[in-house]
Amino acid sequence: MPLTNLSVFTQGNFSLIDARLFYDYQVGLQYSLDEDWVKDLSFTLGYQNVNIESENLYTDIELKSAFIGVITYF
Image (tube, rainbow, N blue to C red):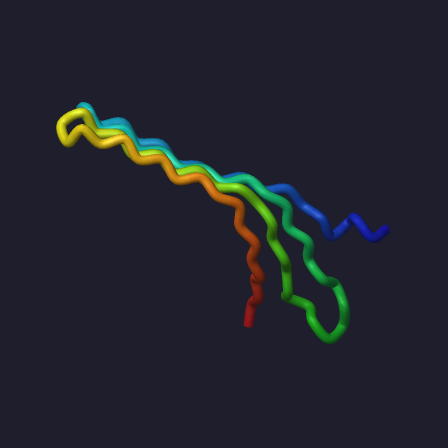
């Protein structure tokens, strides 16, 4: 089946110290090639969000974006 090499991934971090809040997460899809000549090659497509808030510094930063990537092992 061609979709057996397709997987879903998620990763996240969260930190709350005093009046400071930080979190980030990413979710996406990964497709791994399973050919004889390229055993360890994967392609990723996903979305990530990074948020930093600090009441002491009057800071509220939020970064959102889509991403693509290539992963290889050697």
